[in-house]
Every structure is written in structure tokens, then in C-alpha cells.
Image (cartoon, rainbow, N blue to C red; front, side):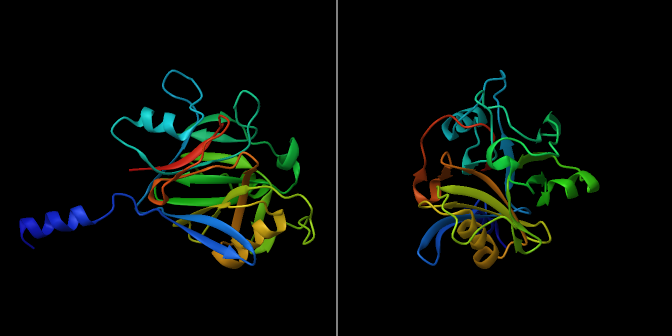
Length: 238
């Protein structure tokens, strides 16, 4: 391959392989973003270099300098001061320990789980399984409830459940090489949201991040949701 052909190949290749698309299940619409863990730089974000909460996608872009977010999403429940409710690890540093018992709100709808990220893999673990296996995680965030557990919906989800919000979460492939993040484009129940991960995305394990405050940053779709300041955020850097 000559020099110009090589350069043309490089220029034609995306720096990040994350892809986002709108999908449906029944009458419900969702946006799903697929991250290739072998190709994409997936990270968690909470504070800037001065210790201030980043809180939104624009602040992360500013903090990255020459880099930018190719994708972003809120990544777990947080207190009023934006500190994470559950286990949180960023770049190998533990900020918050694992919470094995029920916590506030939906976090306490056990079983909940931990999203564990390494340089070339990502997995969703049910919390007690995570404690037992003690996997190494470069980044990690605990949230709840679990949406899908080993191919089954959370046992407390009701098909006729009346709690309906815009919701977001993440599922992982069995081999950990793919992470798929999804947000509903209208209000949905836990049952419908979990069913989307199980039946459409086919992820054997999936974790709920939050509702009401759920937001997506997907520049490839011309979308960057605004709203209140967030706590933990997950994103792909390019």
C-alpha cells in the first residue's frame, strides 16, 4: 500500500467506533449506542482536576482539551452534592465503596449491580456476585436495579407497572467486548425498559442508571440533552 492510500484509509476510518441509532420495541422508542471495547476509549467522569463536579457534557469536553466526547450518558445515582450513591471507581481510584444492602429509591430495588470497565472490556455484575468475584475494574459505578440478570428480567418488574419515566441504562455482551447504552425517548416502565435490553439488544446482563434525569450526548445524531447537573457520567473519548 502506498503512502497516499494508507493516509486515505486512516482519514476514512473513524477515531471512535461508537454508533448510536433509534430502535423500537412495541410502541416504545429508544436510542441505543454501541461501544466496541477493543476500539473505543470508554471512561467514567465525576470531577475536574480542581475537584469540582463536572456535571454536564460540555464541561467534560472542556476538561478533555484536545479530546472530545463522541458519546456520553449519566451513569448512576447520586446525592444532592452529586457524589455517587454506590460504588464508584475512576482511573483505578476508589471514590465510594460497594454498598451491599438496599439504599435509597430505586437503588434499593434489589438486586442492583455494578458496571465494571477496563481498557478492553466491560461487564455488568449483580452486586453480590461482584463482591464474591472481586473483579479488577479501572472504572466502576454501582446503580440499580438490575434490568436483566443472566437473561432474565428483574423478578420484581411488573408487566402492568404504573411507574413510567424516561430511563437509561447499560447492558454488556457475554464476552465483555461490547457495551450497549440505551435511553428511552418517552416514558416507559421498568418492565418495558428491561425487555428492550433482553429482547432487542440481547444483552445477558443489564443495569439501570436512572430515570427523570436521564440524558444522552450523541453528536453523531445531533443530540446533546440539557438539564440539571449530573453526578457520574460515562463517555467515549475521541
